[in-house]
Length: 157
Image (tube, rainbow, N blue to C red; front, side):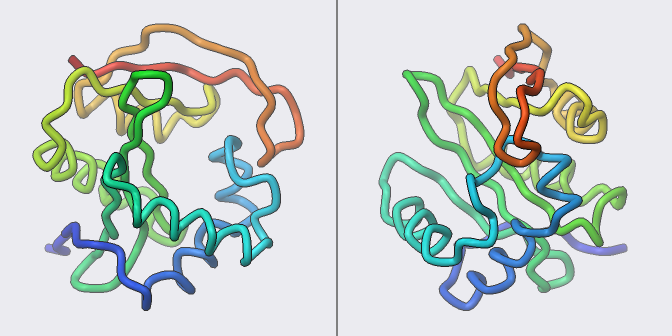
């Protein structure tokens, strides 16, 4: 059985993470993404801020030792929010669910919040299986679709 693990994000991960986060189908599914996923300079600056911040927990997700994504949490307006990104070629294999379960053991903050485009049923299932419950919806601009998109807001107590 394949083994999912979490570790610190390393400099050598950045090229692969950049490629994962600019995959057009993944960007469309995630919806709420960087303004320009192809802007490497903006990506590098963003990752440098994330990695340097003591208020952000960021981990690489590996599968049998190979980098397949990232997971993290950050504070927005007093709420700790979780986010993850799994390389599309690994969707449907349980990687996101296992990474999330491990991350929830690392991050003891509760409540935790999460958001997903309301039509991103796979991500909503992953969050639901981890114990997150829907607390509402919001509609806002999603750069990944260049449109207003309904977003489901979830909470884990």
